[in-house]
Length: 128
Image 1 (tube, rainbow, N blue to C red):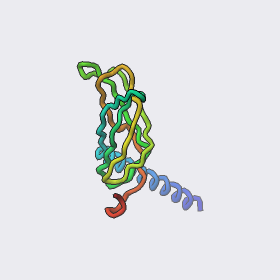
Image 2 (image 1 turned 90 degrees about the vertical axis):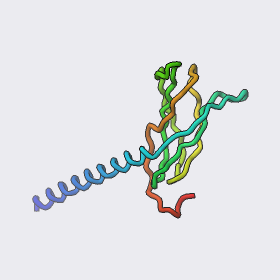
Image 3 (image 1 turned 60 degrees about the vertical axis):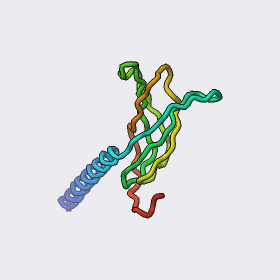
Image 4 (image 1 turned 135 degrees about the vertical axis):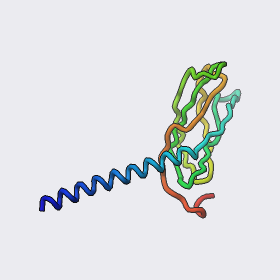
């Protein structure tokens, strides 16, 4: 009886490890298919912002995207890094709008996806 329980527990642990590895691989593949297009926005009545879209070229819906905002000097060297959460739902093969506060004292920036939550695989007819 003890061997059966031990075999069941070991089998469950191995199964969970394999499922975790598969999810990590999918996450890495989807990360390569996310991109950001943005522009600075300066309006007299509001704080300076970076606005744009996160594009998702994968077959997975993603959400809770965190952006890495890198402030660059005149020689394109990073002088400051900030992280900004954009709580958007980005459907598969689609895009989502974002607007984040612009980091101070920089004239140029680099914006990229730092992390995201993988929500679900979508079939062709399920997304706009």
